[in-house]
Length: 388
Image (cartoon, rainbow, N blue to C red; front, side, top):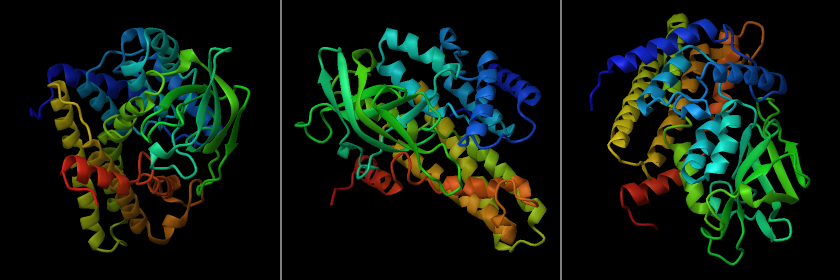
């Protein structure tokens, strides 16, 4: 692949960098998984949208700039290096939106995408259930046909719903043919969380943030217009979403490069007191983040030539999730006893964000499919090893 950027790509980078330097918050916002922090993040999202930066790769009619995949990666690099806020719209714009572009009708695209881009409707993911976390095919939540109303009545429970307490809508899988085989008979539904028969209940997290939720359905109505990709076709539609979740869009390399740069800076400040071997750990983290960056650029180069990542996205997910844990664990080792000072504590280094980041990083090997499951997928579908 060509390791240089074109003049147009460099000009795009300069434009992004200039805008962010003039507009990104000078101090970190409170966590977007708290009610107050979520409201402040929404203000930022709408500022991004007004400047047409919220969905740079989307068509202009939906609020984008029609940026190329390479330009999107450049935007992500500059965004995270500028210390800009986490994207509370991410489950919509990075996971659902690519699926709507691929499977949605023209009416669904026109109805859903502009409001998503403008942060006027916030989406959460309804995948996991009790006894059906990484085994998505084991879901039991069901949808029953209501011909008189022209839609479906849904029943069951979804859990581990990120920012479910604050979102307006949920996308998820529901079993519509109870007699079908495990991977069949499911339908991908778009659910209004304000609908009668929907109950959202917060779940306590280790870090105290209240956005995490579980969602219960007791006969809530979903119209036919909110079936995405066809009845009983939910598995193939969901695989498109999981490809986005494990592959390019959910965790771009820019996020990890920014963390690596912050880690190097932390080491410079703490090296006098730090154990000598931590120098190697910091160097290794930076090298791995850089490797992930160039791996992703190589993937995009192949995609431009028509290649579509498949099971290899499982390798991608394993790498970035474990890299995130390793970088934050190294930071805590550098901080020593000071690592115990949490966000907002007096005397906390970097406002306690390393501990906050570590607590979140621990979930990375679990969400988007546990890494144990991803290793099985990679072994069977990438390496061609036999199943036990």
